[in-house]
Amino acid sequence: MARPPASHRSPHARPLIGTRIRERRLSLGRRQTEVARRAEISAAYLNLIEHNRRPVGEALLTRLAEALEIDATELASDREEALIGALREAAARAGEQPVELDQIAEFAARFPGWAAVLALAVRRADALERRLVALSDRMTRDPYLLTTLHEVQSAVTALRSTATILAETPEIESEWRDRFHANLDSDSQRLSRTAQSLVAYLDSFEDEAVPMSPQEEVEAWIAAGEPDPADAAELASDAARVMARDLLAAQARDRAALPDAALAAAVDEAGETGGDPALIAARLGRPLEPVLRRLGMLRPGPWAQAGLIVCDGSGATPFRHAAPGFELPRPGEGCALWPLFEALAQPQLPVARLIETAGGRRFAAWAVAERLLPMGFDGPVLSRAQMLIRPAGPQDARPALGVGPACRICPRTVCPARHEPSILGPA
Amino acid sequence: MSVDVLLIEDEPSIAEAVRFILTRDGWGCEQWPEGTGALERIRALAPRMLILDLMLPGRSGAEILADLRADPALAALPVLLLSARGTANLPPGADRVLPKPFANADLRAVVRELLEQA
Image (cartoon, rainbow over all chains, first blue to last red; front, side, top):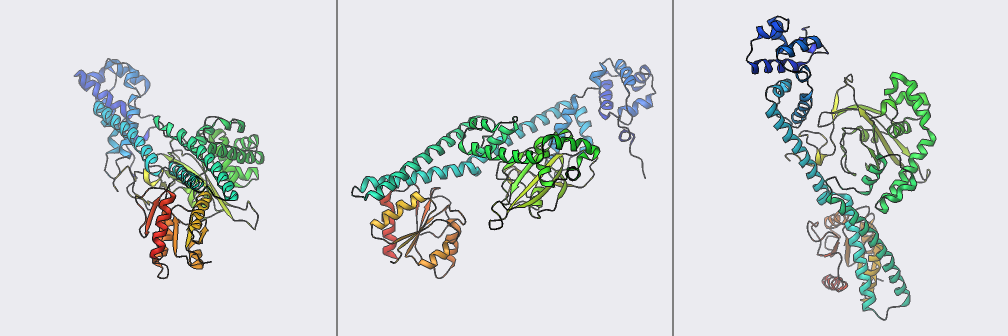
Protein backbone atom coordinates (compact mmCIF):
# COMPACT_ATOMS: atom_id res chain seq x y z
CA MET A 1 0.00 0.00 0.00
CA ALA A 2 1.40 3.40 -0.97
CA ARG A 3 2.37 5.67 1.87
CA PRO A 4 0.55 8.96 2.16
CA PRO A 5 2.52 12.15 1.53
CA ALA A 6 4.69 13.23 4.43
CA SER A 7 2.54 16.27 5.07
CA HIS A 8 -0.41 13.94 5.73
CA ARG A 9 1.53 11.59 7.98
CA SER A 10 2.45 13.98 10.74
CA PRO A 11 -0.28 15.46 12.94
CA HIS A 12 2.03 18.39 13.53
CA ALA A 13 2.44 19.26 9.87
CA ARG A 14 1.49 22.85 9.03
CA PRO A 15 0.87 22.93 5.33
CA LEU A 16 0.11 26.63 5.34
CA ILE A 17 3.38 27.60 6.90
CA GLY A 18 5.38 26.24 4.00
CA THR A 19 3.44 28.30 1.52
CA ARG A 20 3.78 31.40 3.68
CA ILE A 21 7.53 30.84 3.99
CA ARG A 22 7.83 30.58 0.23
CA GLU A 23 5.72 33.71 -0.35
CA ARG A 24 7.77 35.64 2.20
CA ARG A 25 11.10 34.51 0.68
CA LEU A 26 9.99 35.41 -2.83
CA SER A 27 8.70 38.80 -1.67
CA LEU A 28 12.18 39.48 -0.28
CA GLY A 29 13.79 38.30 -3.52
CA ARG A 30 15.98 35.76 -1.75
CA ARG A 31 17.18 32.41 -2.96
CA GLN A 32 16.43 29.14 -1.18
CA THR A 33 20.13 28.48 -0.56
CA GLU A 34 20.56 31.82 1.22
CA VAL A 35 17.57 31.40 3.52
CA ALA A 36 18.38 27.73 4.13
CA ARG A 37 21.91 28.56 5.14
CA ARG A 38 20.76 31.22 7.62
CA ALA A 39 18.18 28.79 9.03
CA GLU A 40 20.81 26.07 9.31
CA ILE A 41 19.09 23.58 7.03
CA SER A 42 19.75 22.33 3.53
CA ALA A 43 18.23 24.02 0.52
CA ALA A 44 16.60 20.72 -0.41
CA TYR A 45 14.92 20.51 3.00
CA LEU A 46 13.68 24.10 2.71
CA ASN A 47 12.28 23.22 -0.69
CA LEU A 48 10.30 20.38 0.88
CA ILE A 49 9.05 22.72 3.62
CA GLU A 50 8.00 25.35 1.12
CA HIS A 51 5.95 22.75 -0.71
CA ASN A 52 4.32 21.70 2.54
CA ARG A 53 5.95 18.29 2.46
CA ARG A 54 7.73 18.59 5.77
CA PRO A 55 6.53 19.81 9.17
CA VAL A 56 8.13 22.81 10.83
CA GLY A 57 9.03 22.57 14.51
CA GLU A 58 9.05 25.55 16.83
CA ALA A 59 12.86 25.96 16.86
CA LEU A 60 13.15 25.75 13.10
CA LEU A 61 10.23 28.13 12.71
CA THR A 62 12.07 30.68 14.84
CA ARG A 63 15.22 30.37 12.73
CA LEU A 64 13.29 30.66 9.48
CA ALA A 65 11.45 33.70 10.78
CA GLU A 66 14.76 35.36 11.63
CA ALA A 67 16.11 34.51 8.20
CA LEU A 68 13.03 35.98 6.59
CA GLU A 69 12.98 39.01 8.94
CA ILE A 70 9.46 38.36 10.11
CA ASP A 71 7.89 37.60 13.46
CA ALA A 72 7.59 33.86 14.02
CA THR A 73 4.07 34.19 15.38
CA GLU A 74 3.02 36.00 12.23
CA LEU A 75 4.57 33.30 10.11
CA ALA A 76 2.68 30.68 12.08
CA SER A 77 -0.44 32.80 12.32
CA ASP A 78 -3.80 31.08 12.29
CA ARG A 79 -5.43 34.05 10.64
CA GLU A 80 -5.80 32.05 7.48
CA GLU A 81 -7.55 29.25 9.31
CA ALA A 82 -10.74 31.28 9.55
CA LEU A 83 -10.34 32.27 5.92
CA ILE A 84 -9.94 28.65 4.90
CA GLY A 85 -13.00 27.76 6.94
CA ALA A 86 -15.00 30.35 5.01
CA LEU A 87 -13.64 29.02 1.73
CA ARG A 88 -14.65 25.49 2.70
CA GLU A 89 -18.16 26.80 3.43
CA ALA A 90 -18.17 28.39 -0.03
CA ALA A 91 -17.07 25.10 -1.59
CA ALA A 92 -19.78 23.19 0.28
CA ARG A 93 -22.36 25.59 -1.11
CA ALA A 94 -21.12 25.15 -4.67
CA GLY A 95 -23.26 22.04 -5.04
CA GLU A 96 -22.19 19.94 -7.97
CA GLN A 97 -19.67 22.50 -9.20
CA PRO A 98 -16.28 20.76 -8.82
CA VAL A 99 -13.95 22.62 -6.46
CA GLU A 100 -10.24 21.92 -5.91
CA LEU A 101 -10.67 21.19 -2.21
CA ASP A 102 -7.08 20.01 -1.84
CA GLN A 103 -5.85 23.42 -2.97
CA ILE A 104 -7.88 25.63 -0.66
CA ALA A 105 -4.93 26.28 1.65
CA GLU A 106 -2.72 27.06 -1.30
CA PHE A 107 -5.31 29.42 -2.74
CA ALA A 108 -5.71 31.27 0.57
CA ALA A 109 -1.99 31.63 0.99
CA ARG A 110 -1.16 32.67 -2.57
CA PHE A 111 -4.13 34.95 -3.16
CA PRO A 112 -5.15 36.21 0.29
CA GLY A 113 -6.92 39.25 -1.18
CA TRP A 114 -9.09 37.28 -3.57
CA ALA A 115 -9.73 34.66 -0.92
CA ALA A 116 -10.88 37.34 1.50
CA VAL A 117 -13.18 38.82 -1.16
CA LEU A 118 -14.68 35.40 -1.80
CA ALA A 119 -15.14 34.75 1.92
CA LEU A 120 -16.78 38.16 2.31
CA ALA A 121 -19.12 37.45 -0.59
CA VAL A 122 -20.07 34.09 0.91
CA ARG A 123 -20.77 35.67 4.30
CA ARG A 124 -22.87 38.36 2.66
CA ALA A 125 -24.73 35.75 0.61
CA ASP A 126 -25.36 33.81 3.82
CA ALA A 127 -26.77 36.88 5.52
CA LEU A 128 -28.99 37.68 2.53
CA GLU A 129 -30.09 34.07 2.35
CA ARG A 130 -31.16 34.11 5.99
CA ARG A 131 -33.02 37.34 5.38
CA LEU A 132 -34.71 35.87 2.29
CA VAL A 133 -35.79 32.80 4.20
CA ALA A 134 -37.13 34.89 7.04
CA LEU A 135 -39.09 37.17 4.72
CA SER A 136 -40.37 34.25 2.70
CA ASP A 137 -41.50 32.60 5.91
CA ARG A 138 -43.26 35.70 7.09
CA MET A 139 -45.03 36.59 3.91
CA THR A 140 -46.01 33.32 2.35
CA ARG A 141 -45.56 30.24 4.42
CA ASP A 142 -45.56 31.22 8.03
CA PRO A 143 -48.17 28.92 9.55
CA TYR A 144 -48.50 31.11 12.60
CA LEU A 145 -49.17 34.23 10.56
CA LEU A 146 -51.64 32.46 8.28
CA THR A 147 -53.47 30.85 11.18
CA THR A 148 -53.62 34.09 13.10
CA LEU A 149 -54.94 36.02 10.12
CA HIS A 150 -57.55 33.33 9.60
CA GLU A 151 -58.56 33.71 13.22
CA VAL A 152 -58.94 37.45 12.74
CA GLN A 153 -61.02 36.94 9.60
CA SER A 154 -63.26 34.44 11.33
CA ALA A 155 -63.81 36.62 14.37
CA VAL A 156 -64.53 39.68 12.23
CA THR A 157 -66.94 37.70 10.06
CA ALA A 158 -68.85 36.48 13.10
CA LEU A 159 -68.93 39.94 14.64
CA ARG A 160 -70.10 41.60 11.44
CA SER A 161 -72.88 39.13 10.71
CA THR A 162 -74.09 39.07 14.30
CA ALA A 163 -73.99 42.83 14.72
CA THR A 164 -75.94 43.27 11.47
CA ILE A 165 -78.58 40.80 12.62
CA LEU A 166 -79.04 42.68 15.88
CA ALA A 167 -79.15 46.04 14.12
CA GLU A 168 -81.56 44.99 11.38
CA THR A 169 -83.85 42.76 13.40
CA PRO A 170 -85.42 44.90 16.13
CA GLU A 171 -88.19 42.37 16.70
CA ILE A 172 -85.73 39.55 17.42
CA GLU A 173 -86.77 37.12 20.14
CA SER A 174 -85.08 37.65 23.50
CA GLU A 175 -83.58 34.18 23.47
CA TRP A 176 -81.87 34.83 20.14
CA ARG A 177 -80.83 38.30 21.23
CA ASP A 178 -79.17 36.90 24.35
CA ARG A 179 -77.35 34.27 22.36
CA PHE A 180 -76.07 36.80 19.85
CA HIS A 181 -74.99 39.16 22.62
CA ALA A 182 -73.03 36.29 24.17
CA ASN A 183 -71.49 35.53 20.78
CA LEU A 184 -70.51 39.18 20.37
CA ASP A 185 -68.85 39.11 23.76
CA SER A 186 -66.84 35.93 23.14
CA ASP A 187 -65.90 36.84 19.57
CA SER A 188 -64.78 40.34 20.53
CA GLN A 189 -62.58 38.86 23.25
CA ARG A 190 -61.16 36.37 20.76
CA LEU A 191 -60.48 39.17 18.30
CA SER A 192 -58.79 41.19 21.02
CA ARG A 193 -56.48 38.32 22.00
CA THR A 194 -55.64 37.47 18.41
CA ALA A 195 -54.96 41.08 17.49
CA GLN A 196 -52.69 41.43 20.51
CA SER A 197 -50.66 38.41 19.45
CA LEU A 198 -50.58 39.56 15.85
CA VAL A 199 -49.30 43.01 16.76
CA ALA A 200 -46.56 41.50 18.96
CA TYR A 201 -45.60 39.19 16.13
CA LEU A 202 -45.56 41.92 13.49
CA ASP A 203 -43.51 44.15 15.79
CA SER A 204 -40.74 41.58 15.62
CA PHE A 205 -40.56 42.11 11.84
CA GLU A 206 -38.60 45.27 12.55
CA ASP A 207 -35.77 43.25 14.02
CA GLU A 208 -33.11 41.66 11.89
CA ALA A 209 -33.66 38.51 13.85
CA VAL A 210 -36.27 36.07 12.67
CA PRO A 211 -39.62 36.95 14.22
CA MET A 212 -40.92 34.60 16.80
CA SER A 213 -44.01 32.51 16.70
CA PRO A 214 -45.24 31.38 20.14
CA GLN A 215 -43.24 28.16 19.85
CA GLU A 216 -40.07 29.99 18.90
CA GLU A 217 -40.65 32.45 21.72
CA VAL A 218 -40.88 29.54 24.16
CA GLU A 219 -37.79 27.89 22.69
CA ALA A 220 -35.78 31.09 23.05
CA TRP A 221 -37.11 31.60 26.58
CA ILE A 222 -36.06 28.10 27.62
CA ALA A 223 -32.71 28.32 25.85
CA ALA A 224 -31.92 31.54 27.70
CA GLY A 225 -31.67 29.77 31.03
CA GLU A 226 -33.60 27.63 33.42
CA PRO A 227 -36.95 29.36 33.48
CA ASP A 228 -39.38 29.09 36.33
CA PRO A 229 -42.96 28.25 35.29
CA ALA A 230 -44.08 31.32 37.23
CA ASP A 231 -42.04 33.48 34.85
CA ALA A 232 -44.07 32.30 31.86
CA ALA A 233 -46.24 35.37 32.38
CA GLU A 234 -43.46 37.44 30.84
CA LEU A 235 -44.01 35.80 27.43
CA ALA A 236 -45.74 37.95 24.84
CA SER A 237 -48.74 35.87 23.84
CA ASP A 238 -51.32 33.71 25.56
CA ALA A 239 -50.37 30.83 23.27
CA ALA A 240 -46.70 31.05 24.27
CA ARG A 241 -47.60 31.12 27.95
CA VAL A 242 -49.75 28.01 27.64
CA MET A 243 -47.09 26.20 25.59
CA ALA A 244 -44.36 27.13 28.07
CA ARG A 245 -46.30 25.86 31.06
CA ASP A 246 -47.19 22.59 29.32
CA LEU A 247 -43.61 22.06 28.23
CA LEU A 248 -42.12 22.79 31.62
CA ALA A 249 -44.64 20.50 33.27
CA ALA A 250 -43.66 17.67 30.91
CA GLN A 251 -39.99 18.29 31.60
CA ALA A 252 -40.62 18.33 35.33
CA ARG A 253 -42.25 14.91 35.05
CA ASP A 254 -39.23 13.60 33.17
CA ARG A 255 -36.89 15.13 35.75
CA ALA A 256 -38.83 13.60 38.63
CA ALA A 257 -38.56 10.18 37.02
CA LEU A 258 -34.89 10.64 36.21
CA PRO A 259 -33.27 13.25 38.48
CA ASP A 260 -30.32 15.37 37.37
CA ALA A 261 -27.91 13.79 39.84
CA ALA A 262 -28.75 10.24 38.81
CA LEU A 263 -28.35 11.04 35.12
CA ALA A 264 -25.09 12.94 35.61
CA ALA A 265 -23.72 10.11 37.75
CA ALA A 266 -24.66 7.52 35.13
CA VAL A 267 -22.93 9.55 32.43
CA ASP A 268 -19.81 9.86 34.61
CA GLU A 269 -19.81 6.18 35.45
CA ALA A 270 -20.25 5.25 31.81
CA GLY A 271 -16.82 6.74 31.16
CA GLU A 272 -15.87 6.29 27.56
CA THR A 273 -19.17 4.57 26.89
CA GLY A 274 -20.86 7.82 27.94
CA GLY A 275 -21.29 8.51 24.25
CA ASP A 276 -23.90 5.80 23.84
CA PRO A 277 -27.33 6.78 25.22
CA ALA A 278 -28.51 3.17 25.15
CA LEU A 279 -25.69 2.15 27.50
CA ILE A 280 -26.56 5.04 29.83
CA ALA A 281 -30.20 3.94 29.79
CA ALA A 282 -29.14 0.37 30.55
CA ARG A 283 -26.97 1.57 33.42
CA LEU A 284 -29.91 3.51 34.82
CA GLY A 285 -32.39 0.72 34.20
CA ARG A 286 -34.60 3.22 32.38
CA PRO A 287 -36.25 3.17 28.94
CA LEU A 288 -34.29 4.87 26.18
CA GLU A 289 -36.99 7.46 25.38
CA PRO A 290 -36.82 9.52 28.60
CA VAL A 291 -33.03 9.13 28.72
CA LEU A 292 -32.74 10.77 25.28
CA ARG A 293 -34.99 13.61 26.41
CA ARG A 294 -33.15 14.10 29.69
CA LEU A 295 -29.71 14.03 28.03
CA GLY A 296 -30.93 16.65 25.59
CA MET A 297 -32.30 18.85 28.36
CA LEU A 298 -29.67 18.48 31.10
CA ARG A 299 -26.72 18.12 28.69
CA PRO A 300 -24.29 16.75 31.29
CA GLY A 301 -20.54 16.57 30.67
CA PRO A 302 -19.85 15.19 27.20
CA TRP A 303 -23.41 16.08 26.16
CA ALA A 304 -22.87 19.82 26.61
CA GLN A 305 -23.39 20.44 22.88
CA ALA A 306 -26.34 18.10 22.49
CA GLY A 307 -29.52 19.08 20.71
CA LEU A 308 -32.97 17.57 21.10
CA ILE A 309 -36.00 17.46 18.83
CA VAL A 310 -39.30 15.89 19.87
CA CYS A 311 -42.12 15.28 17.41
CA ASP A 312 -45.63 13.93 17.63
CA GLY A 313 -47.38 11.54 15.26
CA SER A 314 -48.21 14.33 12.83
CA GLY A 315 -44.55 15.24 12.47
CA ALA A 316 -45.04 18.52 14.35
CA THR A 317 -42.10 19.32 16.60
CA PRO A 318 -43.42 20.79 19.85
CA PHE A 319 -39.93 20.90 21.36
CA ARG A 320 -36.64 21.69 19.68
CA HIS A 321 -33.27 22.59 21.14
CA ALA A 322 -30.67 23.08 18.43
CA ALA A 323 -27.18 21.63 18.71
CA PRO A 324 -24.52 24.17 17.71
CA GLY A 325 -24.27 24.17 13.92
CA PHE A 326 -27.46 22.21 13.34
CA GLU A 327 -29.78 24.63 11.59
CA LEU A 328 -33.42 24.29 12.55
CA PRO A 329 -36.18 25.41 10.19
CA ARG A 330 -39.27 27.26 11.32
CA PRO A 331 -41.66 25.26 13.51
CA GLY A 332 -43.79 22.95 11.41
CA GLU A 333 -40.99 22.20 8.98
CA GLY A 334 -38.29 19.54 8.99
CA CYS A 335 -36.25 17.22 6.82
CA ALA A 336 -37.88 13.88 6.05
CA LEU A 337 -34.44 12.31 6.25
CA TRP A 338 -33.91 13.20 9.91
CA PRO A 339 -33.59 9.96 11.92
CA LEU A 340 -36.39 11.41 14.05
CA PHE A 341 -38.91 10.59 11.33
CA GLU A 342 -37.32 7.25 10.56
CA ALA A 343 -37.88 6.35 14.20
CA LEU A 344 -41.43 7.71 14.11
CA ALA A 345 -42.24 5.23 11.34
CA GLN A 346 -41.05 2.26 13.41
CA PRO A 347 -41.90 2.78 17.09
CA GLN A 348 -39.72 1.09 19.70
CA LEU A 349 -36.94 0.46 17.17
CA PRO A 350 -33.99 2.72 18.02
CA VAL A 351 -32.23 4.46 15.15
CA ALA A 352 -28.60 5.62 15.29
CA ARG A 353 -27.15 7.51 12.34
CA LEU A 354 -24.30 9.77 11.42
CA ILE A 355 -25.85 12.71 9.61
CA GLU A 356 -24.27 15.54 7.68
CA THR A 357 -25.77 18.95 7.06
CA ALA A 358 -25.63 20.72 3.70
CA GLY A 359 -22.89 22.88 5.18
CA GLY A 360 -20.75 19.82 5.84
CA ARG A 361 -21.22 19.57 9.62
CA ARG A 362 -21.58 16.06 10.95
CA PHE A 363 -23.66 14.94 13.90
CA ALA A 364 -24.26 11.67 15.67
CA ALA A 365 -28.01 11.15 16.04
CA TRP A 366 -30.05 8.73 18.14
CA ALA A 367 -33.81 8.50 17.82
CA VAL A 368 -36.60 6.33 19.11
CA ALA A 369 -40.39 6.58 19.03
CA GLU A 370 -42.98 5.39 21.49
CA ARG A 371 -46.74 4.82 21.58
CA LEU A 372 -48.80 6.74 24.13
CA LEU A 373 -52.26 6.04 25.52
CA PRO A 374 -53.10 9.26 27.40
CA MET A 375 -56.80 8.37 27.49
CA GLY A 376 -56.39 4.65 28.14
CA PHE A 377 -57.15 1.76 25.82
CA ASP A 378 -60.44 3.38 24.82
CA GLY A 379 -58.73 6.54 23.64
CA PRO A 380 -56.60 7.23 20.57
CA VAL A 381 -53.08 5.85 20.32
CA LEU A 382 -50.61 8.71 20.02
CA SER A 383 -46.99 8.64 18.91
CA ARG A 384 -43.98 10.58 20.07
CA ALA A 385 -40.43 10.42 18.77
CA GLN A 386 -37.31 12.04 20.17
CA MET A 387 -33.98 12.60 18.49
CA LEU A 388 -30.81 13.44 20.37
CA ILE A 389 -27.90 14.81 18.37
CA ARG A 390 -24.43 16.11 19.07
CA PRO A 391 -21.44 17.05 16.93
CA ALA A 392 -19.69 13.91 15.68
CA GLY A 393 -16.06 13.32 16.42
CA PRO A 394 -13.55 12.76 13.60
CA GLN A 395 -13.25 9.12 14.66
CA ASP A 396 -16.84 8.44 13.62
CA ALA A 397 -16.24 6.59 10.36
CA ARG A 398 -19.82 5.56 9.58
CA PRO A 399 -21.23 6.61 6.21
CA ALA A 400 -22.95 9.95 6.74
CA LEU A 401 -26.55 10.53 5.70
CA GLY A 402 -26.99 13.93 4.08
CA VAL A 403 -29.84 15.88 5.63
CA GLY A 404 -31.10 19.44 5.48
CA PRO A 405 -33.21 21.81 7.54
CA ALA A 406 -36.33 21.57 5.31
CA CYS A 407 -36.85 21.28 1.55
CA ARG A 408 -37.79 24.91 1.12
CA ILE A 409 -34.48 26.17 2.51
CA CYS A 410 -32.25 23.21 1.66
CA PRO A 411 -29.59 23.83 -0.99
CA ARG A 412 -29.12 20.15 -1.87
CA THR A 413 -29.83 19.67 -5.57
CA VAL A 414 -30.31 15.89 -5.42
CA CYS A 415 -32.39 14.41 -2.64
CA PRO A 416 -34.73 11.42 -2.67
CA ALA A 417 -36.95 13.05 -0.04
CA ARG A 418 -37.40 16.47 -1.64
CA HIS A 419 -41.08 17.41 -1.88
CA GLU A 420 -40.81 21.02 -2.99
CA PRO A 421 -38.18 23.19 -4.70
CA SER A 422 -35.81 25.18 -2.57
CA ILE A 423 -36.03 28.94 -2.59
CA LEU A 424 -32.23 28.91 -2.36
CA GLY A 425 -31.50 27.15 -5.62
CA PRO A 426 -32.83 26.12 -9.02
CA ALA A 427 -36.19 24.42 -9.02
CA MET B 1 -88.62 19.44 6.57
CA SER B 2 -86.59 19.55 3.40
CA VAL B 3 -83.11 20.94 3.56
CA ASP B 4 -82.54 23.83 1.23
CA VAL B 5 -79.07 24.71 2.45
CA LEU B 6 -76.40 22.59 4.12
CA LEU B 7 -73.83 24.83 5.77
CA ILE B 8 -70.42 23.25 6.37
CA GLU B 9 -68.72 25.69 8.73
CA ASP B 10 -66.64 25.07 11.84
CA GLU B 11 -66.96 28.51 13.45
CA PRO B 12 -69.98 28.26 15.81
CA SER B 13 -70.74 31.99 15.84
CA ILE B 14 -70.66 32.26 12.04
CA ALA B 15 -72.74 29.12 11.68
CA GLU B 16 -75.32 30.41 14.14
CA ALA B 17 -75.57 33.77 12.39
CA VAL B 18 -75.88 32.21 8.92
CA ARG B 19 -78.51 29.74 10.06
CA PHE B 20 -80.49 32.55 11.67
CA ILE B 21 -80.32 34.70 8.54
CA LEU B 22 -81.35 31.93 6.15
CA THR B 23 -84.06 30.56 8.41
CA ARG B 24 -85.57 34.06 8.68
CA ASP B 25 -85.71 34.12 4.89
CA GLY B 26 -87.67 30.90 4.98
CA TRP B 27 -84.99 28.47 3.92
CA GLY B 28 -84.47 25.15 5.63
CA CYS B 29 -80.87 25.14 6.85
CA GLU B 30 -78.70 22.47 8.48
CA GLN B 31 -75.12 22.69 9.60
CA TRP B 32 -72.11 20.34 9.73
CA PRO B 33 -69.05 21.53 11.72
CA GLU B 34 -66.08 19.77 10.08
CA GLY B 35 -64.66 18.38 6.86
CA THR B 36 -64.69 14.83 8.10
CA GLY B 37 -67.97 13.14 7.23
CA ALA B 38 -69.19 16.12 5.21
CA LEU B 39 -69.76 14.13 2.01
CA GLU B 40 -71.77 11.51 3.88
CA ARG B 41 -73.85 14.30 5.42
CA ILE B 42 -74.50 15.80 1.99
CA ARG B 43 -75.65 12.45 0.64
CA ALA B 44 -77.85 11.84 3.67
CA LEU B 45 -79.59 15.26 3.65
CA ALA B 46 -79.65 15.83 -0.11
CA PRO B 47 -79.71 19.66 0.22
CA ARG B 48 -80.60 21.92 -2.70
CA MET B 49 -77.36 23.85 -2.26
CA LEU B 50 -74.21 23.86 -0.19
CA ILE B 51 -72.43 26.65 1.68
CA LEU B 52 -68.89 25.42 2.15
CA ASP B 53 -66.16 26.98 4.25
CA LEU B 54 -62.69 26.60 2.75
CA MET B 55 -60.69 25.97 5.92
CA LEU B 56 -62.18 23.14 7.92
CA PRO B 57 -60.83 20.66 10.44
CA GLY B 58 -60.41 17.17 9.06
CA ARG B 59 -60.79 17.67 5.33
CA SER B 60 -60.55 21.04 3.63
CA GLY B 61 -63.34 22.64 1.67
CA ALA B 62 -61.21 22.24 -1.48
CA GLU B 63 -61.03 18.47 -0.99
CA ILE B 64 -64.75 18.21 -0.36
CA LEU B 65 -65.48 20.30 -3.45
CA ALA B 66 -63.22 18.13 -5.62
CA ASP B 67 -64.93 14.95 -4.40
CA LEU B 68 -68.31 16.53 -4.95
CA ARG B 69 -67.61 17.43 -8.55
CA ALA B 70 -66.19 13.96 -9.22
CA ASP B 71 -69.38 12.26 -8.01
CA PRO B 72 -72.00 12.14 -10.80
CA ALA B 73 -74.83 12.16 -8.26
CA LEU B 74 -73.58 15.37 -6.60
CA ALA B 75 -71.68 17.11 -9.38
CA ALA B 76 -74.51 19.54 -10.18
CA LEU B 77 -75.12 20.64 -6.59
CA PRO B 78 -74.76 24.46 -6.36
CA VAL B 79 -71.92 25.43 -4.05
CA LEU B 80 -71.23 28.77 -2.40
CA LEU B 81 -67.67 28.88 -1.12
CA LEU B 82 -66.80 30.99 1.95
CA SER B 83 -63.15 32.06 1.84
CA ALA B 84 -61.11 33.75 4.55
CA ARG B 85 -58.23 34.18 2.11
CA GLY B 86 -59.79 36.50 -0.41
CA THR B 87 -60.67 35.31 -3.89
CA ALA B 88 -57.21 34.47 -5.24
CA ASN B 89 -55.94 30.90 -5.74
CA LEU B 90 -59.30 29.35 -4.94
CA PRO B 91 -60.06 25.76 -5.89
CA PRO B 92 -62.12 25.31 -9.06
CA GLY B 93 -65.69 24.10 -9.03
CA ALA B 94 -67.57 26.59 -6.87
CA ASP B 95 -70.62 28.34 -8.33
CA ARG B 96 -70.07 31.45 -6.25
CA VAL B 97 -67.51 32.71 -3.75
CA LEU B 98 -68.01 35.06 -0.81
CA PRO B 99 -64.85 36.34 0.85
CA LYS B 100 -65.04 36.71 4.63
CA PRO B 101 -66.13 38.95 6.22
CA PHE B 102 -69.26 39.19 4.08
CA ALA B 103 -72.33 41.38 4.32
CA ASN B 104 -75.46 39.54 5.37
CA ALA B 105 -77.33 41.08 2.43
CA ASP B 106 -74.80 39.65 -0.01
CA LEU B 107 -75.13 36.22 1.54
CA ARG B 108 -78.90 36.33 1.33
CA ALA B 109 -78.80 37.47 -2.30
CA VAL B 110 -76.38 34.77 -3.41
CA VAL B 111 -78.31 32.03 -1.62
CA ARG B 112 -81.56 33.21 -3.17
CA GLU B 113 -79.99 33.27 -6.61
CA LEU B 114 -78.52 29.78 -6.32
CA LEU B 115 -81.68 28.26 -4.88
CA GLU B 116 -83.81 29.79 -7.61
CA GLN B 117 -81.52 28.17 -10.17
CA ALA B 118 -81.43 24.82 -8.40
